[in-house]
Every structure is written in structure tokens, then in C-alpha cells.
Image 1 (tube, helix red, strand yellow):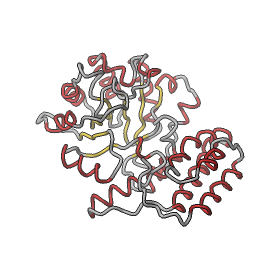
Image 2 (cartoon, rainbow, N blue to C red):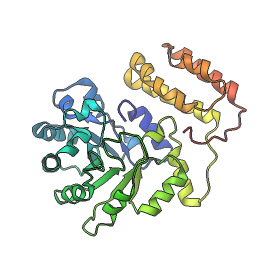
Image 3 (cartoon, rainbow, N blue to C red):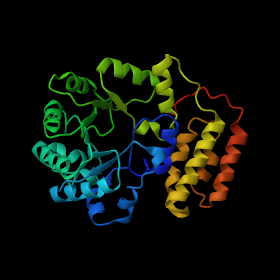
Length: 317
């Protein structure tokens, strides 16, 4: 969730029922070199808690030093990302790249566990490719060296985000009698119905949601309501969507400054208003205009134009 799961976005997810939030993943090399962007990602606000800080890296000393820096930020959890599939991370044997060297994954994790008083958790994938799915062994080995929970994305690195995630392997890990730490499932959960179905079918302790929340933080409240009542909530109204976009933009500018705050909001607008007929000209302005007041005016215009539109489409996907 690089450049997505920042404090402005996390605040919206928390308001809509997310139980546990994670920072954007942070390069350990950036942390130990005092890179401004990496250090800024350690900003945590009380309204967000509990929060996990997620780090990635491939060098033992850097991981240990970064763990000490993260501890000073006082998150509830330190999470290690062994799941990011993008090439610029993988080529350094970080993120999902480490799935090519499981013994090194174990060594790095054990070093981090020993370097901090924080609970250490891990997020990873099934394996590097279909021929190297060793997630059951990985779960046992990581548990044995002290991690407190494991989140598993049901795809290999080779799959990236293509095809369907395979939760059967996640279920095998959860059903392993040797496993006693919480196991969280991740991948393809984008509706309340699917969240309940997967929780019940695969027996996981919880569900991690990433991409489905982008531009749709309401997914958390919808899932929790459905779990509690078996009924689907009405989707957010145009007013709610515009209010969320306004607050997101305001917080983004407040946290990042005008230039970067405006720029990094552009990826979110199409998700907030996906499926709106005739929205394209307004959306084109939202992703090109630099002046905040003009942007807020455009959001007002969207609310005026579409306030009477029946919202039957639910999640924008």
C-alpha cells in the first residue's frame, strides 16, 4: 500500500470500522539513513491505534537497526513485509524476493525479534512460484523463532495480483496442530459476503484487506455489519463519498504540504467516484488541478450534480 496507507487514509479506514491499521511499508535502508520520506512514514496518531509499522529489507544489520528506530515510534506491532511482489523490491531480495531463500527469511526474522520488545508479525505469500509453495514449513519456522502472528496472501510472487488467490494453503496452515499463533488471510476480499464466506470456510483468525479499501473505506463497516446481522448495509451516498474525499484531501495537504498532498490524492478520486455516469470530465480536472480551493469546489460540484443519484452499485469494484 505504498503511498496509500498514510495517516490521512488510515484515519478514514479507522472511522469506518477497521480494527487494525498498518503503515505504508518502509525501507529499512531509508530508516537507518534518516531519509525524510521513510522517517515521515513513522508518524502515528493516537486516533489510529492500534497500528503496526511495516518494514522491508534484506540485510541483517539494517533490519536490526531499523527495528530499534521503529520501537521508538511506539507502534503496537512491528510487521515485516515478505510479500511485496514489485520488481524494484524483489530484485534486492526484499519483500517477496526473500521467498527464494527461506533460511535467510528465518535468520532476518529472528534477528528482528531479538532486536525489539515489540511484538513482531510477518506478512508473506504462498511462495515464489507454483513449484516453491512452502508456506506450511515457513509458518512453523517463523512461529518457532518468535513471531506473534502471520498474514498470508493467497498468491505466489509469480502471480503478482493476477488470477484468484488460493486460500486452501492458508487453511492448511491454520489447521496445522503445531500452529498456535493467529493466522490472517489476505487476497480478493472485496465484499462483505466474501469476507464471511472465507472466514467460515478457511477458519482464519482474521482478514487483512488492502486494495479493496482504496477509495472505499466503507468496506470495513459493511463487513462488520454483515458479520453481525447477516444484512447488507446500503452503500455510501454521494454526500458521504464527497465528504470522505474532502477530508482525505484536507488531511493529505495538512500532513504532506500542498504540492505533495494534492499530487498524491489524485490516485484516489477515480475510486471514490467509480461508476458515476458522466463523471469523466470532472475527474479529469480532479487529477490535473493543483489549486486546493479549486479542487474543493470541484468536489462540491460533484455533490450537487449527483446528490439525487441512487447508489445501488455498492463497492466500486
